[in-house]
Figure 1 (cartoon, one colour):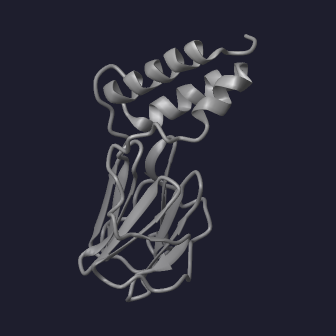
Figure 2 (figure 1 turned 120 degrees about the vertical axis):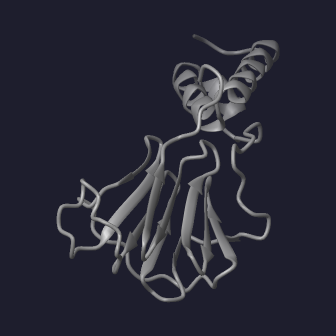
Figure 3 (figure 1 turned 30 degrees about the vertical axis):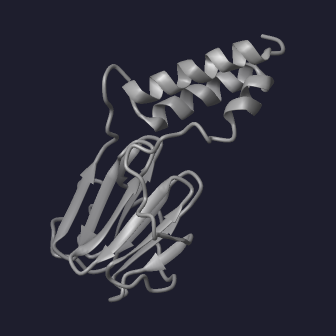
Length: 179
């Protein structure tokens, strides 16, 4: 593939936004990235991500931060460019299969693969307290801090997780149509 003219780039952008409406933003971004590897001009046109429509947007008042802990200090999260990772220190839910030690912290991740428990990772700790009723966002990830736990999600795919002393909920990516 060589240089893309404006018409070809417009057609590619149209195709990617159509894909996004049928699948989800995460899938469309992944396809755009792969196409951009073959065509630098297309990568430049699609790279700004202004065309991305979040599947599950962050709350409008979410603070752009990269790390926080729950007010109790029991849950801590790090929001990166490509993932969000959270750990809970004390819990009463059963240890997930990926986390065989029931006394160790449970770590969960949301990334391009969806959401999952991954206790092979070091536990996340620290970060400023995110008061109950507030939200955090960074890149295409968002989290809310509520009295009943912390919920985080990928705004592009809709993959989410919820952590609380008595609750671990993990949902994979949300896909619509044939995506």
